[in-house]
Image (cartoon, rainbow, N blue to C red):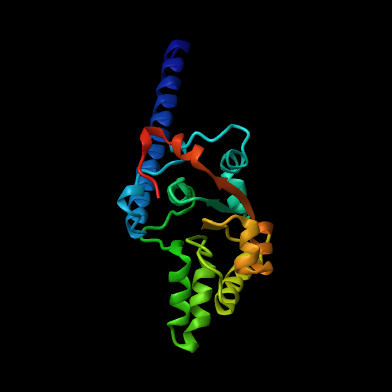
Length: 231
């Protein structure tokens, strides 16, 4: 076998290895996409938010939300959540569903996984207080145990002592492994300073200490591509 034959053989071997690698990558990508589709279906995302994505928004390049999303994996790994505030119709809910979908794509690799929860604050609290006394602690631990917890419609009105105590317990459990806690995303029409009045200083402190705070306004809504339907 002369040098030319050896060179051809080496090229054939290289091509075979490269094709094998591409096949494996394609197989893994297809498997991940299938898992993603099944997990998305498991979480019953409303139809109007199934296509939600960060690129729906034209956030300023130097805004705090742009920086947070640019480093989303690192922020999520470190348990840094997001507090999204703003008036109705500014796209808060759509943004957080986009976050939820991105998190599932990046981190969830188990079919039928329920490791992410999107829930209204009143529903979360009702699940706790409507349960038997003996079950309430386990329900709080369940919410505290989700890898990503998104709480919508937070502090629509002043919180009761029971609401404060229950939510504070959940936040404390989620944050206790800081800096590797579990990220919590909270959506509210109130700004953070108002939360101090309606939810108390302890919850205010937990949110401020473990979240990036972003206020969405009417300009955000106008920057949505194709004038998508929002909250």
